[in-house]
Image (tube, rainbow, N blue to C red; front, top):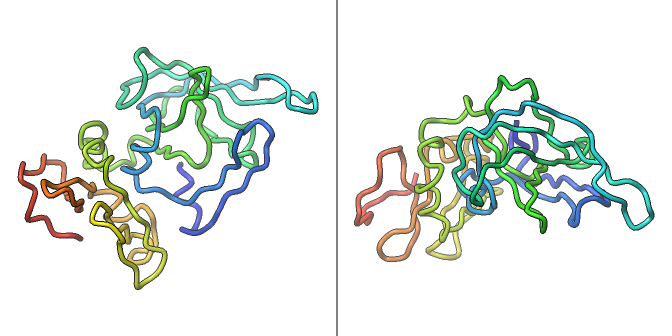
Length: 217
């Protein structure tokens, strides 16, 4: 579902829609980095969809958005209270995200809040069918990924590549496996160790307290 399945690592999705404050320009993110960068991370079903007008642009034209009504199953990160609606662009050309709205499919949804506290999502956000996530990804949502938010997952666009800071983890799925949904994305988290360096950790079992003898994948 997410844009990370469909675009090469360096492809930029550009959107010049007036309804977005910034152009939708992005490259794929490791799910941990997406979690850390998001205001909201939830598991939810979409139970309704409609086009709405949220205002007018500088030229007086209506700003159209898609409003999804959702049933929140669990919030992993976000504000107090339940979220019941999310907004996105009216088409993929305007960075809009197309979600099934029959209430049958569960999604992991990441997104950001606007100044009014409204959750907005676009093609740059990490949005996946819940059933496609690995067990490690599901168990890492929340505390495990949060442990690594002081770290930075750095993409490797081509070999050779390296990190520039001990607080970085090198993400090599694309160059080694030809996909951004590879082994590191599905089974590894980048966690800060006791010496303030960061390293990849594999599995869903909590890491040892010392976390000093980890080996990079």
